[in-house]
Amino acid sequence: MTPLLGADSVALPRTSQMLLGIAEEWSSTSGKLYPFHRDRSGKWMPSFSESIPVLFGRGGLVWGRGAVPTPEGTKKREGDRKAPAGFFAIGKVLGYESALPSGSDASFPYRQVTKWDAWPDDPKNPYYNQHVVIDPKQGIPNWYESQKMRLGDSAYHWLVEIRHNSDPKPVPGGGSAIFFHIRRGPDKSSFGCTTMKQSDLENILRWLRCDANPHYVLLPKAEYQRLKQAWDLPEISM
Image (cartoon, rainbow, N blue to C red; front, side, top):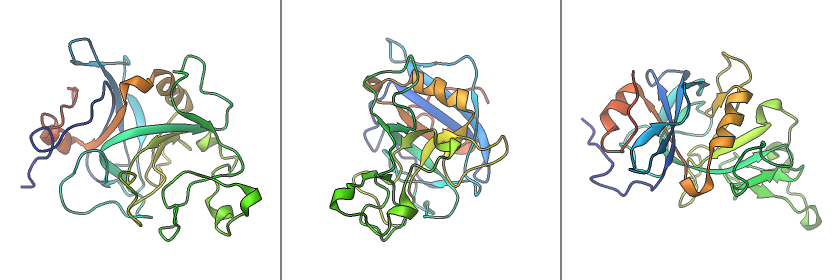
């Protein structure tokens, strides 16, 4: 059996907000998302009255590279259409609006995406899996058109960064551009992102707090049961 990794072997991130994503199994393309916060005693408490239905990658799930080491074995690769499983920091929010939805934490990192924002997914690009803002005065790189973010796509109206394969630096080919974003339809799974209805995503945006250092944990049900104690995860009813 693969040894457990977590509280006994590595320092877990200090977080008081967690989005816990649970899939039925590794091949699942859908599941549920549970937002939690810590109360004053440090106990995990549900933040919403109900879980949120979400979609994952078309290829299911596979171990990703996040804030906590995961078991050895198959890891996410660019283009595999799988959602990365693991324990990930939540980064900045990007979107088409001038500001986050009303009621959001004004201190949460946010950027309105312009025509010059890009997020390269080509492993050969020196900015692979990084947010880049092009300065046209300095010249427009030949890769820009295929890597730009502002596409007028309603699914990308809001993007919440899931820091997979980001720290300390991206591994070329290890998977890029992983976000929470709006789903394209109730049965249209993604290329590796976690997607949901726009209203659900906007509720999450209003809930996120910068000082809570929010994180996302995505696991198949069996791995959740196995890692629950080691990773100090909230208790959910299966």
